[in-house]
Image 1: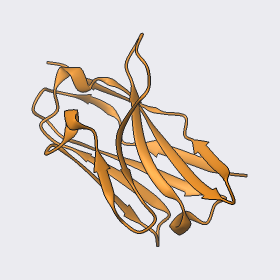
Image 2: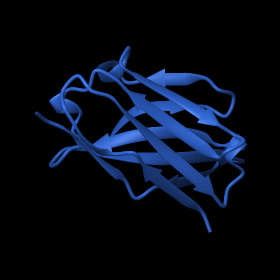
Image 3: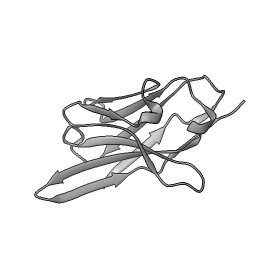
Image 4: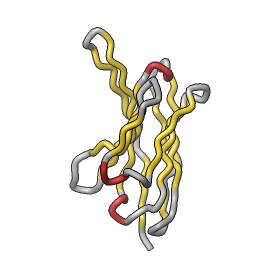
Length: 119
């Protein structure tokens, strides 16, 4: 059974920082591309950042220079360090794991963790 468990969300003041973690089980973590997405109320889910199995990273323009994604294959965990947080970063943040083989997409999601940026 595949599980992605996010943690680290919470309430933070504008300009503050949080680090999200996503612990994976039931998959060969090192072979998966991992991503963080977010969804604000009434809006669609958006890619925030992803990191490939090889360690290449990609960021949405709205977080470039503020957020950093990383992974620890020994701990089966992906992280999202969020600095200089803004109220518009408020959303539920979801962890995603994706692996493609022979045109079959293996795609898994966590349950989400709430991040609220407010004074």
